[in-house]
Image (cartoon, rainbow, N blue to C red; front, top):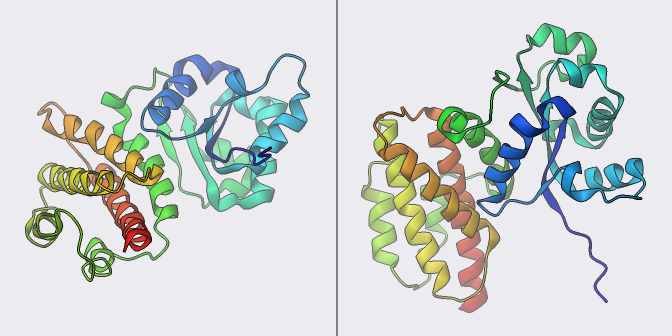
Length: 260
């Protein structure tokens, strides 16, 4: 019997006031690209011991998304969750301040001072409005999977010694495309195109890879966003896809090594 427990990419800490409006839609967006998310609504069953379940989930989660509103600061459980995650690793906490100035948060949670945070209003989480926040969150996960910390070109160089399908196509996209353009719309679309080729190559090996699949699903969302002239892609969107490509190239390298 396999007793290995599931590892979650994100644990979302929140107050009940933000659950329906922000947390559940955010979790659904993350899950739509294959990312594992822990929220208490789904994971804690009737009759389970709440504290032990939460403590166990924190232990098994890579990152904590802390959706902090005024109610969060006044409630025992959310503050306890954040405290437990801080003891584990405060560099893996991604705070989102909801209609709160940072001074108010730091007065209650002083150790958060210095940790990069996002801000939003009390409104439904919607990718059409909050794509930049979504990409900052995703970027942290892909950057964590980018073990070599290299650029796209440097990561690709380690693969070029192998023969693999669509090698010339991928090489052309990486060395001659516009993903370094100052036009972030064009640059982001080119990154999405590179992602499509990486995914196609990985599929020829018939070995599932979660990181590459997540990147591909993420790229489909970003491509649609970038093709919509009503939206203006920012640097967070670009760098989120950039980190996804580097992480996926690293995985493709490992995948090819298992075949050759």
